Image (tube, rainbow, N blue to C red; front, side, top):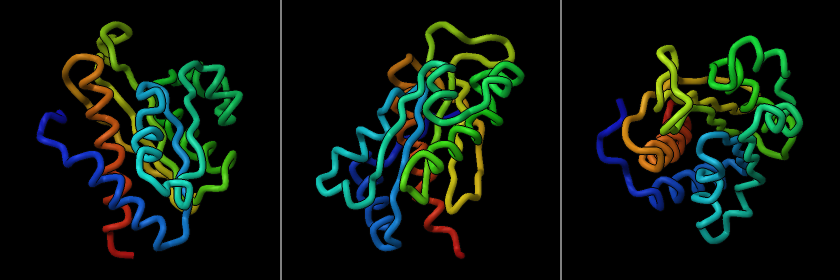
Length: 167
């Protein structure tokens, strides 16, 4: 459950910008339930064009397939909110951009759309760094906008943590 205080979004973006700029890398986002909030947070920082390449808002299943190359069969078999789909989204963001790093998000922000297996607040986050894909299942609680804010912040924290790990 993600309810602890989050670092200020501006700080997370500045830290990420510094790390990407240092490496000369670009970032691409592939967002569903956050609807472009991660990309917006990144591009709120002046000079972000040096390290932010593009953002894909792939809210519908068709957009995931058309814009990112996520196989429709994968969505049919596992559902849009699944590890398989978020990993394909992260890879697709890399393949369809000039970025070396991507972050992808797909989940159920509510208030409707949840189920017993995938309740509201269920979100998969995937990332790809130099074609190595990882993912994590998160469970956020709150109203729709709170869930989306939590996931936006958590996604940026994940990206920062990637660069803090020893090589």
